[in-house]
Length: 400
Image 1 (cartoon, rainbow, N blue to C red):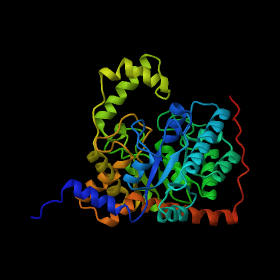
Image 2 (image 1 turned 120 degrees about the vertical axis):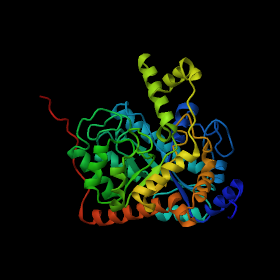
Image 3 (image 1 turned 90 degrees about the horizontal axis):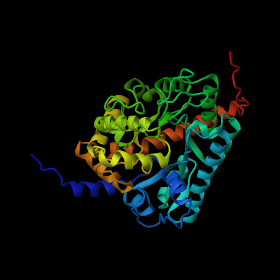
């Protein structure tokens, strides 16, 4: 029986493999960290050198083999319409400034061809993802404006419902998507913007799949069969991704990966509710850390558990429909072995140890998302050739 290749040698081989094609990560929250902790000041946090204050910087992206990154341009779903749109524009402005600050390392990208060209030129392609429909304030015009500024996916909701779509972590209100919500999906796909179903309720997932004319994605979600968290994707939805051509980008968030971490998270939320604190407010999270987390540390999640989710998505949806969306800098804890953006080769190495071929690993790393994006672009060309921009306006339904 042949001996297994040593883990460090496998990781080196995985790192070399990632030089062949771009690894495309679906979700990174560095822009929000830069807003809340550093005032968007790139002099206060130099991402051009290795630092310990975030999960992300350029040297570690390089070490991790990242060829393209969807940067989340997130704002809280609790913000009112004007503040949400302004905040989203500020997030977009930061990513544009970050790319301009490091032109030899980073390049703004809007298409699959851009990603491939940037990779071949040795730069990390930067794409934008709006995390939650609150960013468009129920306005088709704002949606189109975000697309012109480079946003290439929008998550339909965040933790709270929007008026036209139900969130996974809020009470159902419209049964998935309202008529306006279905029109938003149609307009996104006419534009060529990927519909992101992370954060939405299963009914919303199903409604979006029912009306989709282009591939959808989950930018940062894992498998609900392995960890019963509402942010994860049920098998019934995963089975439909093959026909849709979409991709589930498995995330590394411990509470979405490990049942033990999920249980800990439920207890944490209960402790916050007792104290009248909000999980979405940074000051409240700092306060609960002092009051409870320091005495009740979270159990660990592991790289192997993340690999289990990757394999489950592959088993249910197929090898062509699984990707990676780490959610670095969007989570306080990370799995052991996936501490920051330099660790992707270790995950590839783990899968190679589970007999994944090089081509299968490259499909997971970025090939599947690149294909889905190309198909979305082609669908956009066809749809926009026969459909004009949606002129539908949001109207509040009269009360009883």
